Length: 268
Image (cartoon, rainbow, N blue to C red; front, side):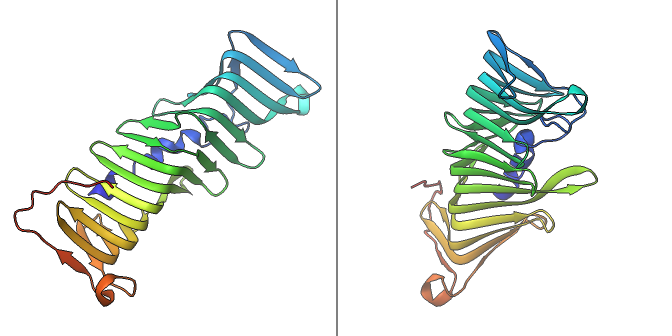
């Protein structure tokens, strides 16, 4: 099913999340910063600035940029407790599974928020590409990741489009696992044979069911199915269209079929 193919994007986007292999100060692994031009220590500002193909590494995660700025507080025994890291210019965040690129990235450790903005905002991992016009935003405390502004997920021949895509994680057995995926605003799932439209959609991992609501329409060539809500059970592989007060024709579901239609998708 189409919905199933987009679920793996959740794991791919964890490149922005802190953990044992991320650039977070509570990790036991050291942070190493290198640069081609200079590493400047501004003691009064409690800041390190690396310029010229700057690179920060911790474990298997790396951030590279034209300029890297690390803000710190003085810790016990002379330690540097980094509370914010800012990357600017040709930013690249990578681990063995995925790579995210943009013009600017800021990880605010105090507030538990990582933001990536500007340029060709893109995340590439095996099997899928995620892009957004405005920003990637990861809220560490509640485990929610947002791709905001013309969010696009491409996996093989299938595409998910929405104004915003939100991925929610939960901690289980010491690991952060997928809880739900939500898409809101002008939601479209496009395959080589059909296009599914709606106002919003959600997938819940607990019951393995995906739902789309609001002006739901499935198009396959000239054939059209309409309803208030659509439901896809990924376990049983059964799809349903449901009526309601907001559906056309007095809340009834509706299907219009054209014999001989060859199928194909439209992407208005």
